[in-house]
Amino acid sequence: MLHTIILILDILVALGLIATVLLQSGRSAGMSGAIAGGAEAIFGKKKGLDDFLARISAVLAGIFIVFTLLLSII
Image (tube, rainbow, N blue to C red; front, side, top):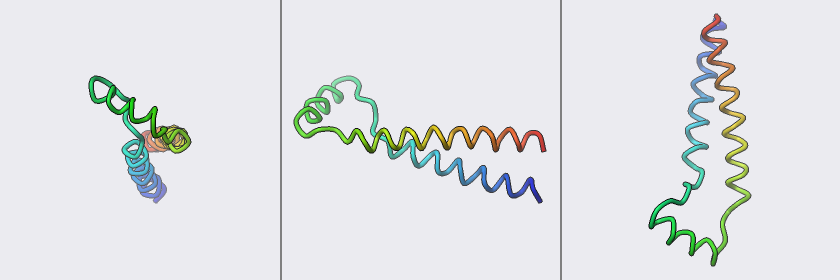
């Protein structure tokens, strides 16, 4: 019973982690980064949302590791 509950929570945390990583803005690189970098200088970048999503993804990653280790022990 406990194994099933932790497995369900692990799957939900994994889906949340995937969602938060996909919602983060990509790191600029190459020619597309040069074009986007110029646009960010003019219009500004959503720094607060990126910081929030990075913090949430770090917390979810930690929870995912704990649940996965618990599943290996049980």
